[in-house]
Length: 101
Image: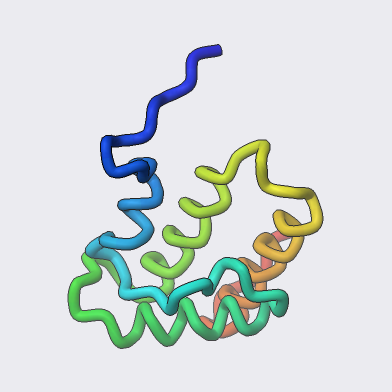
């Protein structure tokens, strides 16, 4: 399996997207928080305040959370992945959307 090289600055493209995306201005370290509800609240706040997002706040927040989870891939520990999946349910609840499963 081939791996992609980091850019000259040492960043991966996914890191650059997370940091400079037009979707949201994220609180630093939001995905490392231990409380799934705190992650969801922070994403909701960022999505609602952002003037650069291109879709509705719920979609922008969920997209960024999904993007982070997918880009972490196999290196994301199961415990961390579970917290992020729980944060998705919390986010759905905050926006009045039905939970999955």
